[in-house]
Image (cartoon, rainbow, N blue to C red):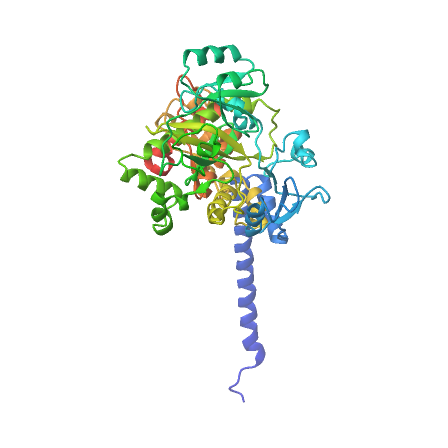
Length: 512
């Protein structure tokens, strides 16, 4: 028993060691805390520190995002807007419709009608006027300048629009031109774009307001003796700076009747209507589309290649014409309403419809706001409509996979600590930034240099959105804006964005 030490002789050394260890540990923790606080105060703003402290106390509870959808008529959820409802549900949105239950908080308004007018916006108009970023609205100010058939046909584009005269203002010019060119055929159109028919010059109502008369393309490219049009789904995401995207497939629709023998009285021979013939029923294209599993665009490319024609000539013209349309109307669109820094995220989906002549020249017929996305008439079109919607929602940031807690936490950080797009992602090593741009105002391009860019919130916000769109565009492709002496960049941000994209293009072809 004497050989067994007393308990106090064992416990006492352990107590001493424990106290010493605790003191060292406390001191280490204290030193670490000082270093962290010093680092935070030196490298991040106060609101970032507060967000970190708050996130320790409690995490935000996620809520369902809300899509407020509106259209005309009954049963829109199961008819012409069915795929729109499905797209939002697939991304986890709660859907509110109509005006009976106005949501206290919403993330996106998607209306079939124009939302920025008191007459057509209805109960949504006030909500749009009071909306703030990042709330989104599927219409953009001034879109009537390109979706209006009259404005579009008389926009004086360099190419791609058949000769047109605005009525009644250019009635005399039209009469003279028609008299000098008696072999030309003419169609009269208005913004409704209904009842299109070739008319004799004498039967055209030159006094009709908000209408125009346009030269008929009388040598269309035919496939199996059928005339067709090509629809391009287009999304404009920003006016300042200008950014426009196109979906990388097309919608091809054929007239229901053979073109020859031609008969001006039979509009089904030369006008693509609601009861058009789909691509999968055209004999020369059936095998390519149905068995080859090509998209509509690739089906057309393969067919024309067999005919000894280069479809790339068509695709390039389509993109060039759409780009010029937006360049020509940008100033009018941007000045169509007073802008504020807290404006919501405006975007607009349209479908540009073209015809092609037998020399592969492309002509723009119209731009449809809120184009048809219903597969009720042609079930196989469901896939393209669903992919268009998925791509659009992703492009404009409405398919964000992050939780709301993450979005709020990231949003409270400084740009240098923002994971989706940090300031280091925007700063490019331009040679002129090494010397000559110590003063950010020395040259306009100096704004793209790191320190200057960090201080320019408007520019850094614009480039951040551009970079996010590039990452999340899915099947959308950004159009390259060819600025020249005739079409000069309208805004400062257009010029700087163009320089930035050119630099990105040098090392990554995806930006070209």
